[in-house]
Every structure is written in C-alpha cells, then in structure tokens.
Image (cartoon, rainbow, N blue to C red; front, side):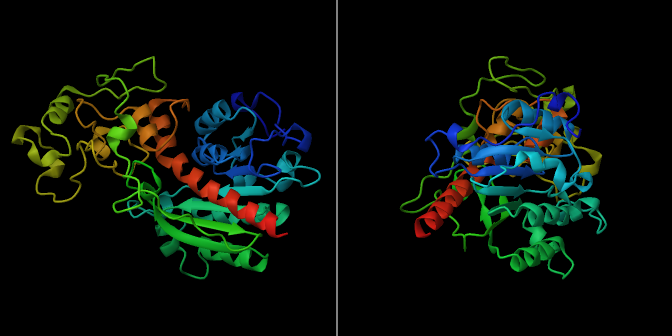
Length: 380
C-alpha cells in the first residue's frame, strides 16, 4: 500500500457523499481539491477558506506532508514522488459517481524557473513535474485546474517543448479554456511583495480573474503591511520561542551577527555597518544589499524564500527586535492563519513556508472559481 510512514497512519480519506454535505458551501456540492505538489498546504488552506474541500495532498517532502496531514485531518496525505505514482493508486479518493466538481492544484516547485536560481540547469528533474500532471488530467478530467508559479515559468516555457507550453497544448486539445495572468499578491491582501504567474483552466468556459482589492486610490483597501501581519505577536529574543503562540520561534544568532543586526535601523541594511562588522565577501560588492536587512513596519514584506528565517539570506530581520523573523511571523507574512501549525525542523518549516502559495491569494482565486462554477450551473 502506498500510504506508508507516520504521515499516513490513518486510512485514506474518501470524499463525502451528498447526504453528508452541509449547507455551508455556496454550491450544491463542494468543489473537491486534489493538491499535487502540495507542500505544507498553502493552496489547500486558501481553497478550504473559499468553501472547497481538500481531499488529497501529494508531495515528495515528508516533513511538509506531516504538516499537511496535521492541518487537513480529513484529507489523504501522500508522501510520494508523482513520477512514481500511478493514476490507479489515487482512484479510491474519487467519487464513484461524480457529483462534486473536481479541482487539480499543480503548484510545482518554482526554483527551476526563478531568476534567483543562478545555477539553474535545463535538465533539472523538477522541470518535468508539470508534464507528469498530464497523466492525471487525462485520467480524471478535473473540471478546474489551478497552477501558480514564478513568472519565470512563462519565459522558461516559450519554446515548443517547454513544460507550460506542453500543458497548454494538452488543455486545448481536451476542451479546457485557460486564462493566465501575472499578479501581485499584495494587490489581493497578502502582506508581501510577491509576483506570481497564475493559470486557471476550466471545462466550464473562460475564467475571469478577480480584480485587485488592495492598493492606492479610491475604491481600494490599503495594502497590508508587516505591522498588520505580525504586530500582534509577542516579542521574543533570537534563539527563543513563545509557547503561547504556535511556531513563534526564532533562530539563534552568533554574537557578531547579533551586533550586526543591532547596527541596522528599521528598513536598513548592511551599508550602515562599521568596518569591523563587514564581511570580506561584501567588500566592493554592490549587490545583495538586502542580506542582514530589517523589514519596514508600514510596508509589505519582501518576497519570502525557503530561507526566510535566516538573517544572512535576505531582508528577513524583524523591524525592531534584534533577530530574524520567527517561523510564525514568516507564516503570517505568507497569510497563513495563526491556527495553522508547522511540523519538522526550523529549517524545514522555513522551507515549507517559503515554498507555499499564500493562502490569502489562493482563497481569492478560489472564491472566483466558486463563482465561476456557480455561474455555469445557473446557465445550464
């Protein structure tokens, strides 16, 4: 049986039947979410908040799957490589008689397509992950498909044999209408500067992206800031935690790094250091000015990476406390709710958060997809 290890000690969850459904969902039947490359479950968390029902989380990262299993107790958490998974192995997770619309989320790891990945290799095995999704699309024909990645995926896929191009050809030949857009997460209420490519494909027709809700000007909500996201959390010191708040733990700092962060003001960086604090590798270097920097209270945070709790890997310093942001603060800046708990080592938790789709973004897109399906049902 493919469900092995601590992550999946419980049996496979099966989709609820029509009689078991409540009336909380905006559709006669909830949209069922099958989250490929789910990581810890950022996409699933947002889609659940939009009224959908997560059924499957699939990811090779076992610690991420432990987090998924912990937070989605009614879903199956499968710690497997999609390349070695057959369609028949997940068939028990589908309704025998299709009642609920099905959504496939396919937010594959973004590192192969990121500009920050200066060691990107054309033969990176992760590039083929979207191709693997095709087997499952052809077998189960989900009504909806949701893909999120860095904008570089679009550039990387301009050639005829690129992974996105091949996926779009598959969708075209199988009756899907697809819409893609590069969006700014902060324009939809996420307190972070995060630019992403979002693709939605549907068997119900053309999908209309929701309009931005946050920004400057009349009719917009103010952009959410670092203060909005983490200002309510209790102060802690570097290397300490607060047990009253889930995952509110910060990495320890060596004495010299503690001195370095103390020499940086809110919004500042390493350029203000005195000579004895400067690293040899930074002498004469014009770039990498964000490392060892502090965030600004009243602006969105920079884009979080898989090393978002490390002071030396970006502008991840707390605006005023002498430390890097905690795991909980990183999660809040990714728009995870405080009740969402992360498992694994500190480094693993940071990786899970940095790789995640912000739940606040997937919720907004999810609500638009629910409205899209509802509109189709009303017409039919």
